[in-house]
Image (cartoon, rainbow, N blue to C red; front, side, top):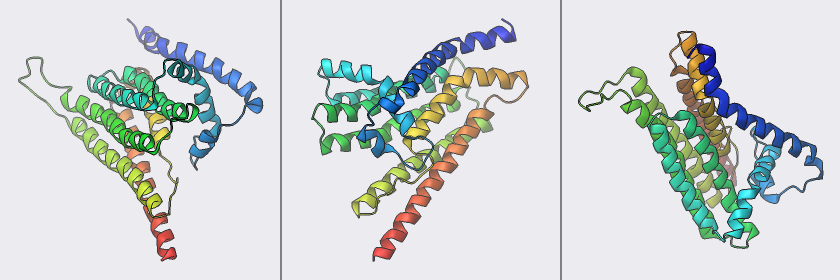
Length: 271
């Protein structure tokens, strides 16, 4: 298979999916002005690049899944727990080196994370316990994905007979970056929760969970194509994912520190 054919076959599933999404996006855009805006979507909006339009669009796309859950009488907690196990499976897929497949699974698991809250509100089963469970399990879901990426780099050069392991500098660098990324994501959530507990909540941050999931899933879906391009120009094919993870780490931790500073100043002024 020559270079052009490799690019084509690696992008064929992506092309079909993107064309379908663009058709749906066009339909949604043309009917946007006549649509009712959900209070849940407005509550999720914060000062970042994912606004109410994109959230409402994704709510609309996932509405059939929400309808099926209602008909089958699936509870919100069941959706939350299933999303957790799907994230665990997605992490395993990443750890096996199937980055593109992991990206599609990540999109699906993240969509379920939006559905459970909507299902609870629309069926009148919203509870504080359910919201607490959802928030806590989200932290595990995030960690499963990132740990899966780390496992892939740490184990990809194990010999077939399991007797020889070679770990390059890049193989070690990725898990180190991931550790700081997990630290940042956990800190962002904890700082927000702790601030709200003392009356100083904030939604500030450039890399909250919707952004992290969107960026990582989009990169993952394009990963085969990106690697082909980098190989074509004799560039290390791991540089792209390293750069992405490093950028996410910087933005997440800077957002966490920004939240810490703002909440501390708010409480300090109140004191």
